[in-house]
Each structure stands twice: as structure tokens, then as C-alpha cells.
Length: 390
Image (cartoon, rainbow, N blue to C red; front, side):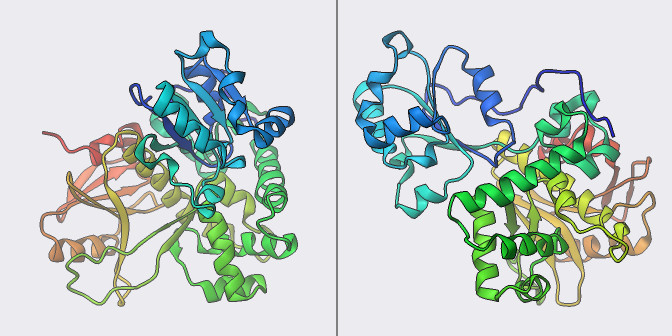
């Protein structure tokens, strides 16, 4: 399938902090380097994936400032893949304090920084994140059917074959680079785990099931999920239990960070039911939009899900100073009456909630206190949900 869009770059929603150093973290392939080059064209960039730069600064981090041309001191100084040399942050800290320089510190993982006790500059640099593309960023180029299968990583839009791009991403990054970083020595077990984890996409996570399906010990599965967390490849959202009036499930809900990555990892064959992909894919695409807008717009919602022991569920609950929002997602062109049961039960416990159901039909309407929105309506203006009108 040809998915290439004849466009150099999409305009990202990420905003530059004003006169402040910042960390920019996000999974590999979300477009951090492209955004940096476009946003800071006059800045000096240290790419720690480049061997000569890496070896020089690894051996002599104190040489950092001497490697920056003096005419570049008034611009942002960029260090890409900063987690490769955690000790470099001590020099960055000194230069922020003593020279008032401004840094952009990007990377695909904060794992090594946390593991070595790095304090991320003790508040002297903001932490911001980059996500896969959003429908808002794509505008008229957004195609729901295409995105549900191939996801929203920017690189896949620049290739003639989105499938080939995703399989390359999975093999070269999720497997090979994880091994090269020394995060796991058993690549075969990790590969089986990745496939097994796809069956938990958009579902409450049962570690024992993943362990059984991948033939890997439960303790090892816990470690593997921690790797996905650290590399921002996997996301787990907790149950919403504030002032709970019912007995609730006590498990977190799991997502791979991009629909296309989930789809590429998912086993496909005569014994695999492809119809099981549409629900998790639709929910994952909505989740990507919600968490990206929440971050980029600095809305400060915490994102949860809600599920009772009797299996009534709400896919997403957004909670914060701006209010309480409940969202159910259905990969169906029609809404049945029982599709509203979870939302209505949640409304009875939290009368102040604003409730939404997103589905793949074409009509927007209101039923039983629930705003029912077509996917086209939601993806064309997700802020109508996340940002309440004044």
C-alpha cells in the first residue's frame, strides 16, 4: 500500500519553553530530531549516536563548552540521545548555572538517567514529551482507516510501503537496539514476549497470561514490561478509584505507544482472528490523541480507565483541575443501548462528569447524558473534549 505523503514535515503542536532549558523525551521515531533541526536551525547540535562525538564527550565531558563555537552561545545548545552519557549532565548543570546557557536535551529513554540516580538537573530544565503524530497535526492528510492499521509514526508517511517501514522499525529498534543496549540478553524470549503483549493491547494487564503465552517466567515478564515503560514503548494507565463506590478491578491497562507498532508486532496467520484488532486499534488511536493533546496543551489531566468487578467499563477517565471526563470508544458504525451501560453507571457515581462515546458512524447526537461523537468529529477537533468551553 502506498502511504507516502508528499510533504517534508508536519507542523507539530509541541511548544518551545521560553528561555528555559528542557529535556525532550519520546520513543525513537516520533520525530524529535526533525523537530529540533527545524525549530533550532542556528543551534549547535551534539549527536551522541555519532561515534567521534560520543567518544570525545564520554572521555572528557568537561570539553563540552569548548566544542561549541562562541557565536552559537546565544542559541540553544542541543544534545541528542543524552541518556548515552549521563555524566554529561553534570557539565550541563554547571553551564546552565554559571554561563546561563540554554540546552535542549533529547533522548528516547530516561532509563540510564534514572538508573544512575541523575536528578534531571533538579528543576533547572523542564521535562516535555513528544508523541506520534496526532490527527490535529496531520489535518486534511489524516485518514482514519489508514491510521488504524499503520499508526502515526512520522517516518511511515515518507516511505512508499508503511508495512515495510513498521517491520523495519520493529526489527531494528524493538529487538536489535534493545539487545545492543544490554537491556536483555535473551532476544528470542523478548521477541516472544512482544508478540504476547499485543494480546493485552487496550486491556487490563494480566502478567501471568503474558508469561504463559510467551513461555517466559512471570518475573522476567515484569522486567520486560519495565523495559517498555523505560523506553516509552509501552504505556500503562491505572484504574480510577477516587471516592470509589463500587468494587473495582485492581489492574492497569496496557498500550503499545503506536497503533502501527502494535499492528506490526501482532501475530497474523490462519489461527489469528484479524477482527480482534479493530477494537484495540481504535481505542489506541484515541488514546494517542488524548495523551498528546493533554501534554502539548499542558492540560494536566491524569488519564485513567474504570472497570468494576462486574465488568462495567469506561475506556478513559480524564481527571484534573479542568474537570472530570469519561470516554468510551467503539469500533462500530452503530451504537447499541448497552454500549452506554458503563458510562451511565459511572455517571451515577460521579454526577459531575462529562461523558462521551466515540464510534465509527457518521451521526453526532446526545443520549442518556452522553455526547455521542463520530470518529470524524472527534479527530477533527479533539480539543472539544479535552478543553471545556468557558
